[in-house]
Image (cartoon, rainbow, N blue to C red):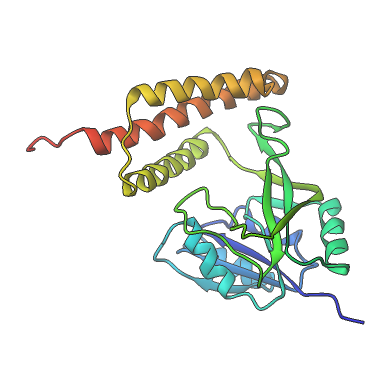
Amino acid sequence: MSSRPTLAAVLIVKNESENLAACLATLDWVDEIVVLDSGSTDGTREMAEAAGARFFVNADWPGFGKQRQIAQAHVQSDWILWVDADERVTPELKTSIEAILAKPTTHTVYSVARLSWVFGRFIRHCGWYPDRVLRLYPKALTGYNDALVHEKVTLKKGIKTKKLKGDLLHYTYRDLEHYLVKSAGYAAAWADQRQQRGKKGSLAQGLLHGVGCFLKMYLLKAGFLDGKQGLLLSLLSAHSTFVKYADLWIRTNTRGPRE
């Protein structure tokens, strides 16, 4: 009778001392924890090592996709569970994962439903739930692509996807300032990626996509059922969408004062 495959929880982090302890406390049942840091200065390393994690540093940020590839290369276990520092594994999700490892299947990756806490409540509409993300798979089977942002697990021919039971709780934003800073970072990475591909943006595109984003989240995805938080999140998401295209437009359609 074959033994149960080993499991590593893997995180990429930077300055996550406010979140990391609570996150790692929900991972005390895995065989290995791998943390790849991109240059923390707030005690993240000490917190990770206190929890028994294997800690590595790659401060030369290559983008989210490649950073995850580097982290995966440090894993010694058979399977990988990806978790962000602002996420928490629920008991039901843990049970679901353990059931998979007890009877592992081949050529299969597993998705997790994320339930996000935003501005004082869990968001169950706005298109934010179940927000399934591929997070569990055999190390030898696949990994992340090279995307600078919005990276994805590569699904080669023949790979199946299945759903895990239980939620991954996501405490995504501390406050409005945190949202705006985080959103600006994603917008810049998105514009970088598009610019590298030779794409151009326009303010009209930004306006159209921004309005479309609001209507989809607040009306079509029933964001109004999430109360004032649903309205605020829909408005902020529309703004973030506009900013992405505005950033790309500024980069590709405007000139400096001496040009």
